[in-house]
Length: 49
Length: 160
Image (cartoon, rainbow over all chains, first blue to last red; front, top):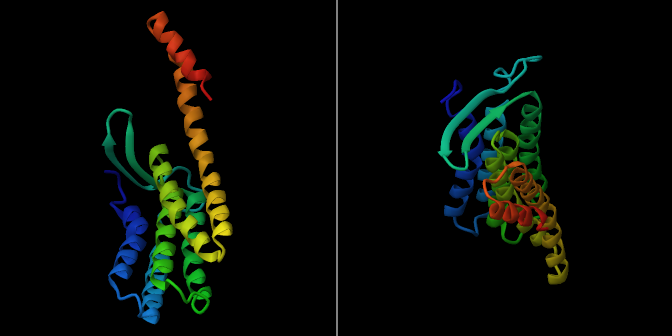
């Protein structure tokens, strides 16, 4: 294990966790699905920069 | 992440290295340098923009569309951060599947859909060809011990 911990792994697989969360939601709640996807992608962008 | 890669610094930062497979030597090796940092930030910047752009235009299979979009981000970012050839290839394939499904979902006619998916997968076959080329080059440079194995290696090298 090199310095830096698991930061890159967390950053890579965070959208996958968001995708799994989306899969568990009901399919007809479109607005909530869009908001969750946007929050996950924005959180991923903010954590990188 | 930007703070971890100072301007003008050479080499990879925030490296992660875990042993995965001994033979062939395949490891879980990630890292970021100045070039990949820019590409990763660009990718993560474009994902919320694409979600906002598709806010009203996507009305059918909304959940599947956004799941595929997020999985596409996983694949693309993994491609940019992987430092192992096999890991790169794995993330490349992870990227291809949602991309093909997203493109196919945009086409209405089944024939057009098939053509688009085929085009994406033909684009994805380029790394396959490179992979086989590397493997054949490696076999060509190995000096086999016996004549029979030399013949088998040369047959392997000639195989298209």
